[in-house]
Each structure stands twice: as structure tokens, then as C-alpha cells.
Length: 390
Image 1 (cartoon, rainbow, N blue to C red):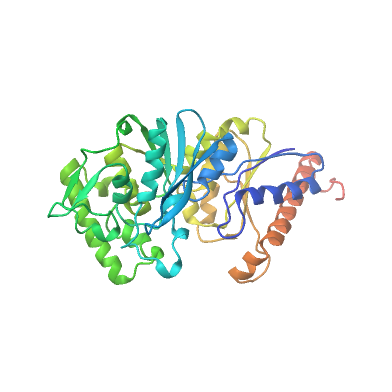
Image 2 (cartoon, one colour):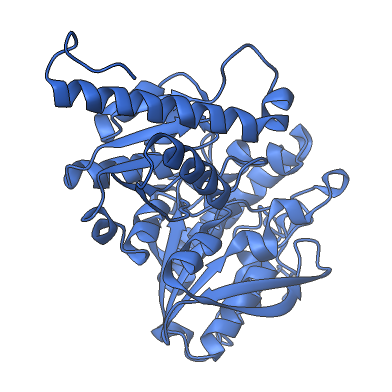
């Protein structure tokens, strides 16, 4: 048997690499002598950089940037060829970089992400992919663009810092000092959402609360984002609310598309392309994927739906082993996933499940591989009555 393990991380518990190690141990117990290969995967959120660099044997470039609150922060981006660079927004402007007690998207900026982009451009990389998940910001991408030379001015001509509270203040946009050479760079925005910039499904009202915004702050940010949208609309004759993904990462998706002509790409599709996933399937009998929680959202630009579609196209069976299941998980069967197993084996709290995740995942993997072995024995015998005793 030739297995390929390609699971997303289980947020807060198991990394993609750890799931692969546990799966290999379980597979070798049930299928001695089997072939196991593993690749970390992600959908444009946290872990995307690690997944791509691991699969492509890429390198990291580290530098000091401004964190979401403007304090110095060590961050890195990846390179996988002499022209390709991979930037993960979360590395410089991610929510985990802000202590929970200090989270307020009025005050955070994506400036550090812009510093990573600027460094990559100055080093001569001409194809830059930006993974925009996991942000701490709701600044419309102004901070990032400011690091690249674009100036956002208030009604009196003073330059703004580019934080969330500046959305309501910006009156003019000056592109005259845009970083030289950046207009010849191709940008790919790796994203797993299609939210518009404003409105009930927009950047602020959907994601602002998890970034620390109170109801009053949400109201102020949304008002500011609508003002910013109207300014962009008059400058570019494009309505950002009609651009799927414009609301990603607090509006960074919009800024990358409008200011840098970035192309919005489903994160999982770009990751699978970069790691040559379809080629790996050519010598694979079964793929095992999974994630922390599987539900209807898993069907929309997430790891499991992308894996399922590619496996379906190549007629390679795929089983999912997930932490837990929610409403709509069965919709993945329409996207190439053949079966879904869960780690939870008894009523328990989330805290208990996460504390015992290694044991629960290992036991679930053993059950899954035993069931697979039983199915293979039934298939070989051609009859339930004639199968050999396991």
C-alpha cells in the first residue's frame, strides 16, 4: 500500500507534520511494509509558509519588522526559486502577535507585512504569493501599502499611520512614491474566503469581533471602511464590494488587488500547485487528509475540499480523519472525500479532547486502518462468508 498523508493542522493542538507522524506509526502497525509519504498542507492561513517550504525545500529570509501594534517583531518569508517568494501575513501582522488584553483593531496595522513584501521586491523576486489568513488588523491594507511607499493623507494633507482608526480619516491617496520595481511583480493572494470589503459579510462585521472589537468599535470601523471603500471606488472606478475576497485580512485583499494588481487565488489550490500535489498522486493508493473540525465551511476553499477535488480528478480514494464533525460535513462527499472519521470516541469537553489529542488521534487512526484492512480482505475474498479471520 502506498499512502499519502496530507492533513491540515488541528488548530491549537496538532500540526500538519504531527498528524503525519501519528498516521505513519498507525499505518505501519496495521500494514507492515507499507509506503508512507506526507506533505504538510494549508489553505492560505497560518501554516501556509511552513507547508510550502517543507514540500519545496525552500529557504527562509528573516528580518525585523513592525508588529501589529508597531513594536519590533522578528518575521520571515520564504523563497522557493530565484524568482518566487512566499509571504505569510500572520508572521508579521497575525492575531497571535497581539496579547489578548491588548487586541483592538482600531490600533493595529499591516505595516509589517508590507515590510516583508518590500524586502522580497528589493531582492529581485518577481512572483510573490501572499497568504492572508490569521490577521490582527482591520486597516483596509493601508499599513501594508504605506510600507510600500503609498501615502494616505487626511483632509489637511497630513500622512496617516494606516491603522484601523485611520479608515475614517483618509481623504487622499498618493502613489507617487510607490516602491520602484514593484509594478513589474506578479502578486498572488492566497485566500480561503470571498468576503466583500463592507457590509454584513464584510471584513469588519464578520471578523472584527475575534480581533478584539467591541460593538462600538465595530460600528466605528465599519463606518470608516465604508468611507475608505467610497474613496477607492472614486479613485479606481471599481467597487471593492464587488471583488470577492476584498474583505480578507481586514481589507488587505482589497489593497493587494487594487494597488498591486494582485490576483486572488483559492489558497489551497495555489498550495497544491506549488507542491506538485497531482504528481504525488500518480504513485498513491490512498490519501488521508483531515482538520480539527469538519463542517459545511470545509467545502469552501478549505484544505479538505481542495484535496478531495484533486483526488477525485485522479481517481485516487481519500479518507478524512478529523477532530470533530459539525453540520454539513457530509457535503464533502460531493467533493471527492470518500469517508470521514472522527477522533472523538466519547462525550467530552473541547479542553479534554485537546489535552488528549495525541492519544485520541492515534486510536482513531488505528481504527481507520483496521477498517481499511477489513475492506481490502473482503474485496480480495469476494464474499463476506469466505473472508479469513483477522
